[in-house]
Amino acid sequence: MSEAVRPLSARLSSPGSAPPPAHTGGAMAVAASARFELDPAMRAAWEEAVARYPKRRAAVMELLHTVQDRLGFVPREAVAAIAGFLEIPDVAVFEVLTFYPMYRATPGGRHAVRVCHNIACDLMGARGLLRALRARFGVRPGETGGEGAFHLEAVECLAACGGAPVVDVDGEYHEGMTPEGLCEAVGRLLDGEAR
Ligand code: FES
Image (cartoon, rainbow, N blue to C red; front, side):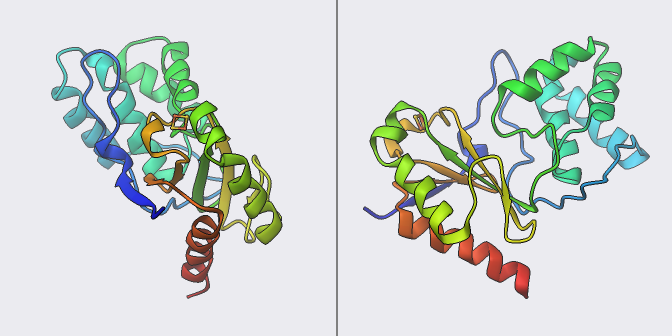
């Protein structure tokens, strides 16, 4: 079966009134020591985002994306800044950050590889995908491989069960993934790093 690739942004929909965030996909520029600073550019982006929603707090996912797009993850300082900006408790932001698998609360690799291992994907071969990555790159879920090039995660349902097994590479969904296809995709990430 050939794999199908669809951008994550085409699939996302948040609860309530928030539309899918626009800031998904692309390589993650991660700096492990990155600290969050609400600079004028970020503040302007947040103001713009908030203006699109009927309620201020409904912009929480989009604001999380702006931070993650910049840092590759969402540090605690950013959680507090978003909460203050939206006038909601820190925990309300943290709940969203930790609920959705596309957000990272800690720094990882420069690229993110997320293999769904929930029921449909498990039945369709997710374990074989993880085995292949371990055999080829020596990486298990939760680890970073390729000298920091990519971080591997086994995640819960990516809401694309009809295309199982599904892998999210830097925000792009790859459906009907095969062990060979996944190793090739990760190999391409490493090739890109080497250039
Ligand atoms: S079980 Fe994998 S996408 Fe739903």
